[in-house]
Length: 150
Image (cartoon, rainbow, N blue to C red):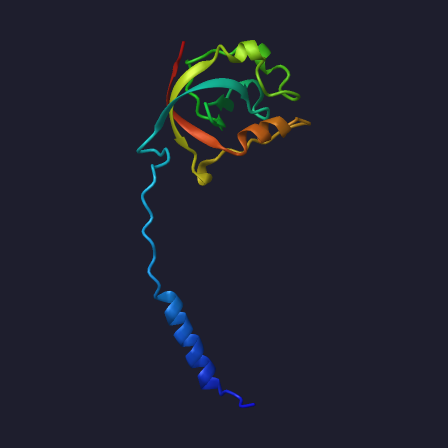
């Protein structure tokens, strides 16, 4: 059996890397841009709950869209006044009772929160986050405008 020399191995590696690297790349069709600061999405949503770690502040609200559920920490003040009773069981359940949730319908302009700007609330005490995390899956949005919807 004949042994190959070192230069033969180098030449083989060089040729194979050139062959692989010179393949044409397929053109990918442009996709619809995701919501951004320059291109916010306008959609109808219902406010169905809150971030249990923010408590009664109403700062972190859970919004249900037709196909997604997210949390926002930028809901504009004055659109809705939430009764304190909606937040009283926050350590156990972060969702509004069904008849109440149906009252808080909004139309919002928003974009996805960049990772560097996401809010991670500090929970003080024993708080059930399982349902909140299951529903929102870490998805956050920044709302630019919001208005009540009948």
